[in-house]
Length: 422
Image (cartoon, rainbow, N blue to C red; front, top):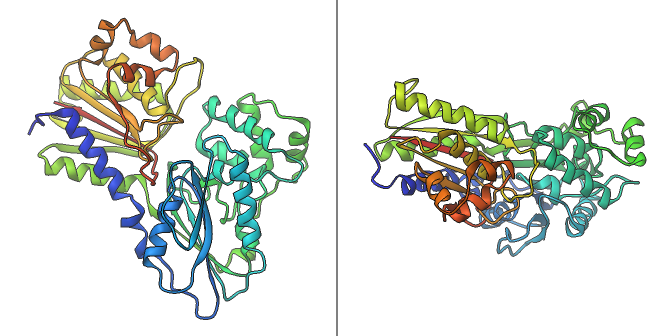
């Protein structure tokens, strides 16, 4: 069956994907049993942390207190758990203060106490507490350089762990001897729990040597004190053999695959065959788009590897190496590169959005593409190739009125891409 309104169809598929990984649907089944004699403390960080805290409050029987930090504009109406808002993707003083408060809050707990830690993507920036001898300004500068470098999220978080006083399991050790139950919504390819938000409560087996190698790989110069910090192993993180983690447990409650499967189900219910390529695609956004465009053209022209009409879905986390001065995150970059590669090829529509509702640091979740996108832009004097060279996917789709502005979704399983071939 062919959708009568392809762009509206793609938007409905995206909405169903986001809904499937909401805290309200995913979290309640993973709540632990309240302690008999101890207290329950809720801590956490990430773009979806406040929404998760609200779900805990709504479903918890008994005493409860705590603090979570989320991105500005991503709060929730919690009564017993304090919500602090801070900056993402570059940390600020509010995030640093919240991280210190959380670290102070878990001091002096007993083995009868329970700590519920709520973690989603974005927590690395929001839970910013530099290691002794490192300033927030230095961490901000390194964070900005990593974001522009094209480094994978696992690489960025490796560096962040070894420059932090709270990430890479340090918060988990500070909670000891209390039992810690960490509930996570995964925004990382491969769903490695320790990579999500740089694993503040989970053991970490990466090394300072690896962090230094990553900085060298992307030619990111660091001050002498940070180089010495890494070379001296002062930033070493507690490993999986540390016995203080023995009583703790973690559960990933939502992943990108869940969102993709929900989207596929929505498409099939509308009579459109859906295929999931992968939930863990990485690489430069513009290069990933070229491969997707080639696949879409092969389907359209050859009926391989799928027959049309069909919907091709993929997730993961691409990167953008910033060379221009334009606006836009990795999903707008992907879609603009797809537009250049397809160049008005008929009967192909696409959507690329971040499931957290914010593409990079802009106000849009992503955008929509259609066969006429490049031609419509040229009528306004806008050349897609030039916009791509300037990393200005936001500007391109803004001019076409094809940005998707959903507002914060308060969940995050990373990139979501849907290509409809009619």
